[in-house]
Length: 185
Image 1 (tube, rainbow, N blue to C red):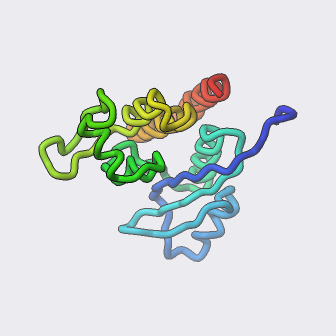
Image 2 (cartoon, rainbow, N blue to C red):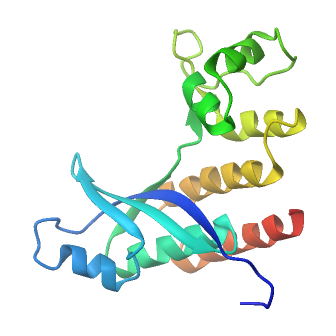
């Protein structure tokens, strides 16, 4: 690591499959593969690894966590926090009240808030966090790092869903994102 590079804590969750939680060596495999900074649980047949990882940026934390999960023999199903967000999710991630976000959505506090991308006609619409975080950044409610992290998670999930992508290409793609993140900050 280059001198002067500060380590920070990043939180992320990896949803995985492919390991038997009932196996005697289940937790040992994860621990020995480098997932020693994750809280592990099993829900609805999936392995949930909640990482608090020390790294120089979010992308490096994400890439190393994915590599560790794969080294344990598990398949990465998706990364969270998800890019689809509710009004409550937006408020929590931006550190704002739900009422304040509601005013943004209605256009009563600022204009051009992004439109929902799912459940548009229901009482519980969902927004794309990347679009919302960009808007929040332009309105000085979030920093650039939040936007780049949101983009990284969304792109990582797109790559994970496309199972034809080789793990080395996946890491390279995210490492390129890390370089962009470091240059922007």
